[in-house]
Every structure is written in structure tokens, then in C-alpha cells.
Length: 432
Ligand code: LLP
Image 1: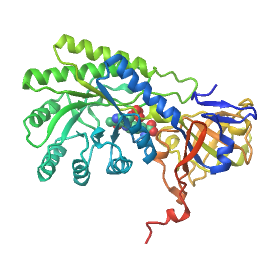
Image 2: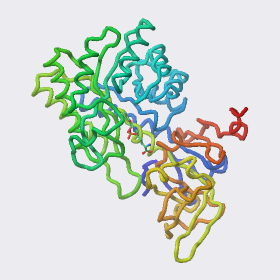
Image 3: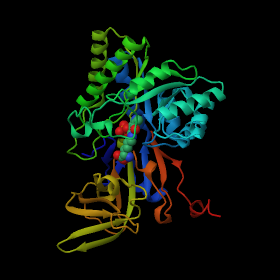
Image 4: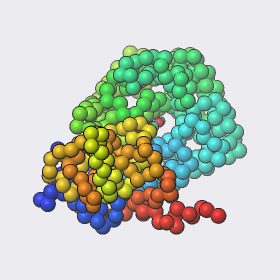
């Protein structure tokens, strides 16, 4: 009935999330409100690590990509499931650390890590640092020597696959700010240097081909390219690369018409490619990492808003204005992303209108979506925007000096605050 399976309609015709009445949540915690279903987050994590178990004998680790949604509570949930974490800044590392996350299960990313960030990662025993470029390698070697440490590293490789075209343009991705290019020999030279380094230990290679990808073929192709590169390294340098991190990017259903491949099929087919390529090349199967972000968090989240104004412009469109917008969800203004929306207190009714849901920021492009099917919405109604659990809270801002909404976490039919709503004093806390 809705894009996320934890959503339903109760006897009062209200939208429920994880069995809880969302109209009641809006009443109790206020709007705008991020609602995250912990049971579903856990279920999504398990789908990944169980399929890793089933199709690859458990010789791998899920590193949840915390850029999708990070807070202390989320780190605790991921830790309690036994999964690892992908962090991309000192802020994400710090959140993990403060949550008591086992830092040896953290992979540290970033195309332009600062010395401060690298030192923080080394000092706090991050599992591996995914080195993006040669100057970072040199800076890290120096920092490692100063700390008397030998950090484990991977290299981020551009495998030359452009997943967004749904075709494999093998050189397409050379123009990317992330990672080392394969086809120019840049990646091989870096591996050669790191393999001989006393200050770092090269333990793996990494690739990430994009986000919100529906097909499995680009992932299979990336795995194939990476395994062949590992074999080339063995053949030409006599060096064994033990780990292969295949990144994230698994698509989710934002709209009924979206049809992403199930995660399990991805794991099955990619494992198959890894195994058969290794068999053919006489290579030991590497330890695999994957970094799902959106597919863990997005379907588990909704955002609740209260409707303020309804503005009908005859022959043009109807604007339904809500008490949030691009500050809590910048994805429409950035990517023209599409979402499903429901009037939570009229969820049993038909979505009889097509409207533009507008935010409250002083910006014409501040929209949640256009031409969206919705029940007849009026002032005071509660609108739920679905599948907003990833890249909404994490990309939110204080534009127009708006306060960031609270995040409420649902578990076993109960709600609790995971992140408090910002206060007006929070808005000025760093002002001097
Ligand atoms: N690993 C690496 C190295 C990444 O760069 C990313 C996402 C992920 C894993 C997780 O990808 P996911 O499974 O979430 O697709 N702000 C954009 C998405 C940016 C993704 C950046 N990297 C959005 O709102 O759609």
C-alpha cells in the first residue's frame, strides 16, 4: 500500500509507522518531525549481513554508511547488530567514538581528509583508512610515523564504471574527484608505493560506483574489474590484497513505480562473480566489505509536517505549504528527488489531488515535490513524506535560522527521542 513495508493505516484512518499512530506522534513531539523505525533499521541491516552469510560464507562485513543518517543512537544500533561503520569526516568519527562504537570496525573515507582528521583516525584506532589520493598517502605516512603507528589502509579506486547511465562506460568515471584511476596506471603506482611502505599496511581496495542504483550488472562489473586488479597486483608485485570493499549505492523504492533489485539478489550475484573470477585467476577469495547507507536508513524514516497555507492558483497549481522544507529535506532542490506523501490524518482516503508541497523557506525552489498525488489537504492536517530516513536529517541545515527537527526512534510499538529538537538558543549558541 505504501513504499515502505512498516507503514499502514489504523482504524481511525491514520497513517501508522511501526504500528504507531503518526498523528499522535506529531501531537506529542511536534512538527516537523523525523520518525525512524529502529525495528526496520535492524531488519535492513540483517538482510545485508544474513545474505553475506548465505552467499559468501560470512567472510565479509557490512559497514553502514553513516553519512546517510548518523547520531549516537544510530551508531549504537549498528554496533549492537555487530556491523561496521563507514565514516567520512571527523564529525562522523567522533559520533561513533562517543557512541562507544568499536573503532576497529570503522572505515574512514573522504577525498580531502585534513591532517587533523587523519591524526584523529590514527589516534583512535580506526580499522582502516580509505586513502583517496597520493598526497593523502604521503601525509598519512608522516602522521603515522609521528604516532608510532602503522595504520591499515585501502585505496579508493575508480573502476571506470558509470552506473547511472545503466550502461558500462568503462572510462566514464575517470572525471571524478574520488579515488585513483585504474586505466591511467595511477592506481597501480600507488599500490606499488604503499606495498613497500613501512608506515602503512595496505590491506584492501575500495570502489563505490554511485548511489540509488537499481540494477545489479554495474556492481557485478565493478567486482570483476577489482578482482582482476587484485590479480594483477599479485602477478606483478607479488603482493596479496586481502580485502575488497565494494561500496554502497543500492537503490530503494521512493515511488511505487521504482523497482530496485532486492539486496539479497545483489549479494548472491556479486558473490558469484567474486568466487568465479577468483577461481579462474587462482586467487584466494578476499574478505568483502559493503557500505549500504540509503538502503538501511531511507525506508525506515518518514518526516511529519503540519500544513499551514493552502493556495490554489486556478489553472496553474495548488501549493500546500508545510512547516519544514529544504532545511530538513534539501533533496528536491538539489536533485529533484521524488517522494510519496500522505495526509497522515486522512490516510484511508483516496489521494484525489495533485499538488505541490512547498516548504517555508524564502526560496521559490524550496519544495518537497511537485505534481504529487495527495488527499485533500487543509490547514492543520499532518503530512507524512515517506522514505526520508537517509540524506534528510544528515543534510539538514539552519537556513533562515530554522531549528532542526527532533528525531524520534520507534521500537516495539514505543517511541523515544533520539535527537532533540533544536531550541532558539541552539540557533545562536555559537554567535558572539
Ligand atoms: N560508500 C561510499 C564511499 C559513498 O560515497 C557512499 C555514498 C556510500 C557508501 C553509501 O551510498 P548509499 O548506499 O547510501 O547509496 N546525498 C545524496 C547521496 C550521496 C551519496 C554519497 N556517497 C542523496 O541524497 O541522494
